[in-house]
Length: 283
Length: 351
Image (cartoon, rainbow over all chains, first blue to last red; front, top):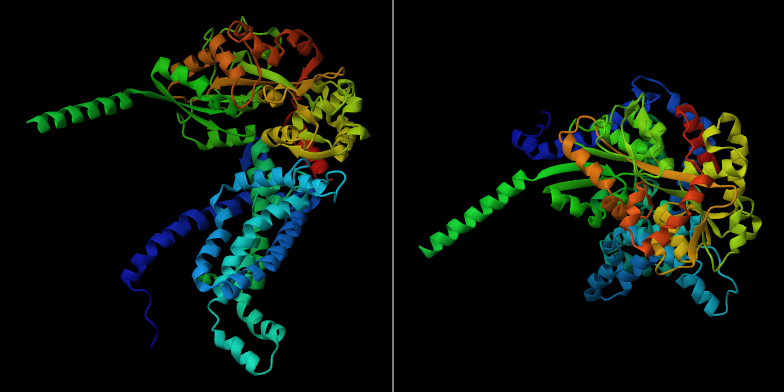
């Protein structure tokens, strides 16, 4: 006896989501994939199965370096955000009284309420030579001259981390509060100290929350244009910035599509690597 | 009865409003940000009982792609970089201007730019605004004499205090001028020399910034010099920070110009021409020149009769003859050279 497929009513409920996914994800993705094998002759788009754009990607140093820069920044942001978010989520879940937890979470996600662009420009002002950080350090006698913080990779990573720590805090917190308190008590009863309890019990059980948050951080960070554009000062280009150049001036949709496919491939690889622990249903 | 009368009056009023709204014509314009200033658009809307829908774009490529993907009639007016008019004509997105519809008799002769706005004897666009990509700087922080020569602007003395305007054509034009190459004569053989200058410039710069970022960097003291800046960068800050100024070095600088034309297939070609006539009229030109997004010189010299003395001082109206003589138009590379220039620019950014 084989299990029955979705009923007519089931398909009816599924239809809006399926149509939406096909119209706004699968179809555009297929067009983009086909476009990446097309070429531009003058201003004329020539459809075909040319690998020219992918070959160009390997030949032009600024293109493959953009891929490397994107990967380096994204991995740094992901690691730093996890390291900062875990203790924060731990404190909120286990140290903050339950009645205050909602308020603390609300405060934690407050930065999400402001415009992404405004927040990036705000960081630019904070990190500027005449900005709050430099002036405070100079005022405290710790610096004689302002140091360059804005328009650097440090600034880009800072802007990203500010945003993604909040996202990771939420996913890790959601995981932590689902763990029964008995697990920690049982570990203690069996003679484990605080570190051993964390390392052998809590951390493995919260891996899905960490990996889910880290995966979302990776996806959002590697495709972001605004933060590196505003905070990085164009001192190094990421893939989305290079894509914008291809579109803005040249209208070179085939090369821009090939770059976008590379981004998709990177995200797919990361998804496959992390799929064992991914629990998007926990969001 | 009273209620019924009120109801009748209300519905009649609503029908009247709806009818008026339906009667109001609409004009769709693809523009640069300086056209989005209500002070510029509202007088035209009120005078012609028309609603002007504006959409900003960045980069000619993006505009051409948008137009090519639109249905005929979606757009009526296009504002475009003066050197890219021929690209728009090649792409078939600009319609010929009706002969004699827009007079350029009062324009500064150097910016009529018939060679750019006319293809095979047919005029497709008209220059509306111009200015300079040159050197903007903070007069309190740098030696003004150093800014008078391109050889000293990006010298070691100003390492880390420079921002480069993020548009390859004017900056590469400045690099070419620094090397003694006329912008109109830039060829593939000049790429090494231009690349050398760019590389030096880049190594001394703190950032490569767009309009807002460059303005912010200069205004907040993050940098003291913007290579590729000009009146369009500092004029809107003139009141609050008069120390932010600009100059044209003795070697010269690059002149930008924007053109405006009617989109091919426009459903309101007459209204589109009326809009262009308004934009290049002395009143429209004065408003466009002092737009809240960025200032620039009006193409029509008669705008001088409308602008205030203070506005003309900021635009350096009286110095225009010297500036026009000293500056060169944007480089206008063909498609192959354009790709080569962009590659060189991106390689320099990634160095």
